[in-house]
Length: 362
Image (cartoon, rainbow, N blue to C red; front, top):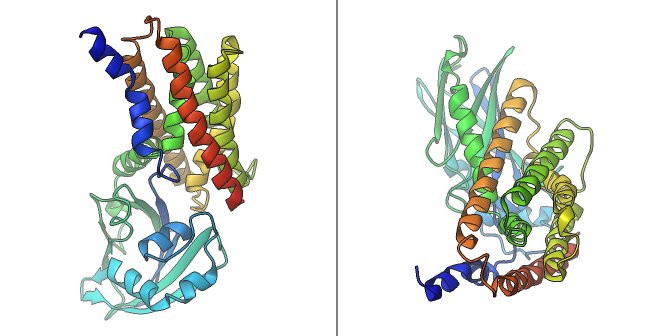
């Protein structure tokens, strides 16, 4: 590759920033939670979602930084019922079980919006099929994590774009449950998508790796970051700490700005792994916020936490590997320090925008 092509390749991180910096927030994969209960001939389906994600699906006219209010959904009650009724279906061996009621639950507002839907079958069912077709039109990477409660048994399932139905027999053993491997892989991909689709996470990893593009400094920084976010995500998951969601979002943007300034001033670079560990603690709380409203218990919680965290690690390795492979071509060039400062400046501007925007939403 000639010198001109190498220089163009080395500017790709900046071009990436220019292509996506107009976005207000880095969008990540969305998650909802379902709980299904059987009461005779009635099937009760409770859905919990981020209020903003549901508002987006309903095409509600809301301000980006303003919290979603109860009135926003009350004014669109008919649209809410129509959307949920069209996107959720329950079928027994007797045929379709019609939707008879939709009851909104605003107790989690302004963060979480929930609704309980009641379906009535022709007779108490022996076999059911649940069909889920919500949110995929606004987020193809969406995951719905759910559980059917049958007396003492729990059947776990995951809906995603490729798996939109779950069929099970009510009176027999757990053989009808989705396989552990299928659920694990779906959540692993969710963690991967969360990193790859999150602009703020991508920029943090780029600004963390770009200044010291040597094998061991990068390994130490990425390892410290991974260990730290695993610790705080686990602590938050099991209730040891209760992080304030909106403040954490602001601090994540501050972390990006701090490392960008560090790159531009070329100070404290020997301690980059310590900085990565400190800010990894914050990012772990940010990762937890993706799943914090889902309230999983027992072995299924462990499966979700393990798979989601592994997906995050794979996503981080993919980003750092791609950036490193690209920049290794030009790290020894005389103008490479200027590239580092230029890219860091662009990332600093983006993080400054996020700090202001997210602070307004606190």
